[in-house]
Length: 248
Image 1 (cartoon, helix red, strand yellow):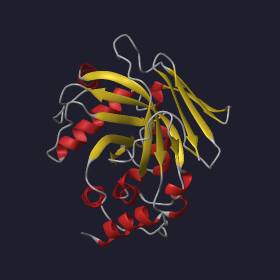
Image 2 (tube, one colour; image 1 turned 90 degrees about the vertical axis):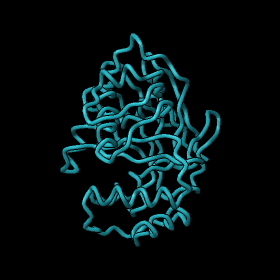
Image 3 (cartoon, helix red, strand yellow; image 1 turned 45 degrees about the horizontal axis):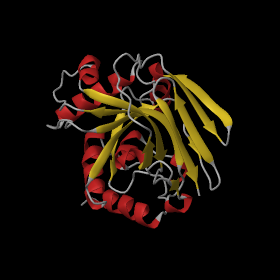
């Protein structure tokens, strides 16, 4: 196991942030470190999460494609359960549209149309980020190695995707009853299914596919916001549903 993977695993377990430093990894090498981190955290995957799926965020980070990570067993917060702030280092939350597949997806030519055909349902989701680098200061490869800041997540009820234009669905993101931001599904690579298709193609480059029954958080519709004990988060996505999260 690499030294960076060991330090990232220790940071998760001790809830202690690492000092930012450029590892000099390539993105490909960073995904190999990510695999080591996931294995060190138990290796049981329950969902995938995509990041840097907005054009604005890519421009900010000076990259031209998204990234992905994995949410492991124990990371799902079920509706009605709270996020325990002290279990993480510096949590932030963001609204997302999640996809639940019913058909395996694989290959370097997968399109958004194929993703939608393989989608059993979509769900409103709250992705809880927790960078293991102090102040969320990192290079692209280093955040990939850090499992794309994956920490916790909660999803609402599944809704059949048929008849829903995911480009135009509106999202209302609120914290403590106050509006934080609004967005449309098109904020994610012009269509959230584009992000999932990119993910499947990226997996194919590594000889992998996305199994049937996979849950994929397709990327943030808005910027993430920090949370503290006592906060209450609500995400409402038109035609898809509502999901809420309390922080203790």
